[in-house]
Structures are given as structure tokens and as C-alpha cells.
Image 1 (tube, rainbow, N blue to C red):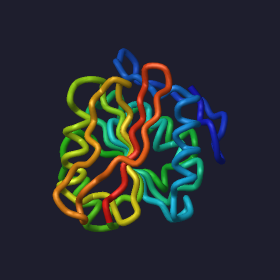
Image 2: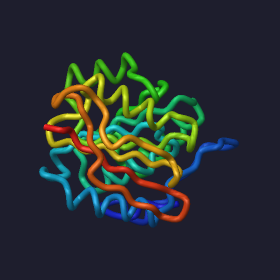
Image 3: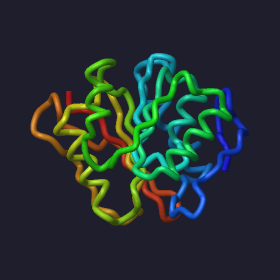
Length: 196
């Protein structure tokens, strides 16, 4: 598993030992970032990213490699947090990374504090364990808490047959709407943006 683009392209990543982490395949990450780059309305250097269910941190590291201003990695296990930290250090991105140990399927105090201090996220990437209802739960809290900024994009990776909503949220300020979906083998990618 390697970084597929940007300044750290080709850098190998480590995975947590004895873990059930399922890293996003290189070719899927490359496709995801091509789509994302084409739909972005700001430069990578102006983007703040959340990598939920970070695992190895591969998605957030791809964003940092492309120049993202800052990435917040959220993962619930110490083994995964340790792997993310090692990967961030080996890529030289420590100054632009924040690691939070929390349940990514709900709003945490640390994420709330980050948003209060620095503002909402421009990009949110979520790669929860497949078919456990965590994608829906995560979409719900992101919409309800309004953590995605104006013009922001959220990407959810899930099993291709998962039934994710077309639209979620109550208002223009917090609502998310799917604008694209792609399938790569057994993996599906859903792209959401704020209504307004």
C-alpha cells in the first residue's frame, strides 16, 4: 500500500498489526482523488480534511500529499492511531496532522473543539467497516452537526450494495445530497455535497 499522488507519491504505508483494518486499494484511492480534485472549488492548499475511520490514514495522507492545509484523523483503536502516527511521521506531515482517538460514527468532543477553533471541514472522507450501519450513522451526525462547510464534499466508502440515502439532513445549512456514486469491484464510493 502506497501513496498514489502528490509530494509523498510512492511512500509505503504501515497497517496496524493484528487488526481488521481494510485499507482502501491504491487504484480506488487514485480514482477517488481524481474525482474529488475535479469537483473542488478551492485549491488543495486551502482545504481542511477529516479522515473518519482512518485505519492506516491512507485517505488523509493522500490529501496531505496533494497539499491539504490540515487533516484530522479520527480512529477508535490505539493500534490504528499508532499506525496513522507512524505513517504521518514517515511522510513528513506531522505539522499538518491532528490525531483523535474517538468513535468516528458520532460527534466527539475533540472534533467539536477543532471546528470551534478552526472552522468546518472542506472535505470529509469516511471509510467505516462495511455493512454495519456505520455509514448511515456517520452521514447523519455530519449533517445534524453541520460540520461540512459551504461547498464542502463528503465521500463515503462502503460495500457496493449498501443502500445509502440520496439526501440527508433537515435544512440547507446541514443537509447533504449525493451527487455521484461509483463502484470498483466490491467497493462503492458515494459523493455528497451540502444542499446550499
